[in-house]
Length: 259
Image 1 (cartoon, rainbow, N blue to C red):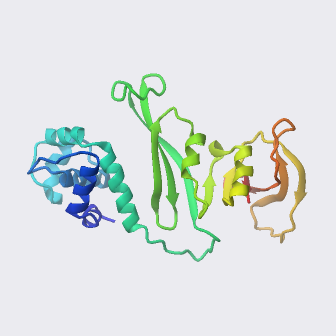
Image 2: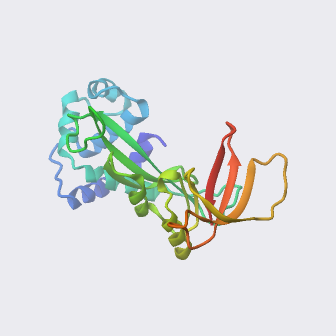
Image 3: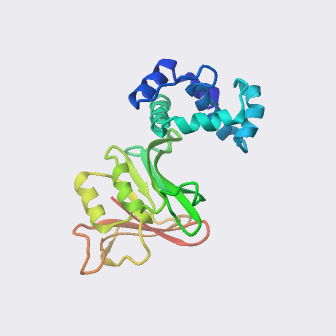
């Protein structure tokens, strides 16, 4: 979807209502909030190197002529919450799911995070490691619509696990990596009828394994399929969980737990 098409999904009234909701009043007549949004969309799509670069080429993409410092000043005064609310509004309008030929009982919800780092002086409130500062975006992504379904922002040092609790959805199949694995969490998911596929940590002990019957296939990457309890005697799941071990394209065995 092009930046122009994204902008067409937003009316001036919707942008104004969101701005008013966070207490922001757009007093500019030339480089408005809408133009700032358009600038950021174009910059992301065309990978503009700087505000100066964007100001030079912007008129070729329908932006008005402006000094590059105008973007910096405007971005500094506009509350971040406006952009977050606009993203949620755009997603709600564009999220028309197209079913794949591979039918799942419920749509997938893929959860992961990414860390964005800068020099420590840029974000002094978000120290990360050494001379770097960082923020982290925890994202729930919908493969069917190719769009994020939910985003939570934190400082870079915040662990994925606790934040992942905000990104669950019982109407979808949760797909997560090892950072979100926790034994008591899996037991709770079973009670809450939350479907999940989560990669297991390598050191998790498997207790009282019972193999599941399955059709044999020489071309299958699945190496094992069984139920068991997870963890040691001191910390063990109260419920039996299904564990599937498969081999990836590089020949490594991957263990996932699922219900």
